[in-house]
Length: 157
Image (cartoon, rainbow, N blue to C red; front, side, top):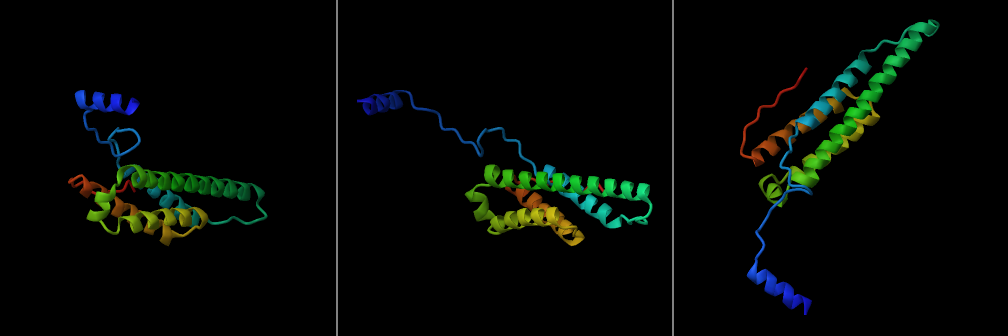
């Protein structure tokens, strides 16, 4: 009986078709936040590698060194996590099957980017931090191509 009533209502007052690419149809996606976070992680990696440990007998210099190192590592960890989150949001909320048809390597590109985020977090590897930036650049290019827009790649540093 309820099905019949529902069918009658649908016939007399059909619902308008709606489409959303995410949980909430905000329409606001941009890979720039992943770029900014990945670039910050790259910057912190460079700063960590450039630090020179002081003479261990100089307690004040050693404390300053350790404090600076801890701050750089904390920022690198935080920013890499942000990059990973932003990449996954694009993957889960924005990119759709039609994008996979258009860019068959999209799944692997996202997977590589998230794996690189993990590597950048647990290592101090300039190579992996630079690879992450390059993979985020690729995601940037794919993203804007899906919108039929040309948005130039740039970095802040």
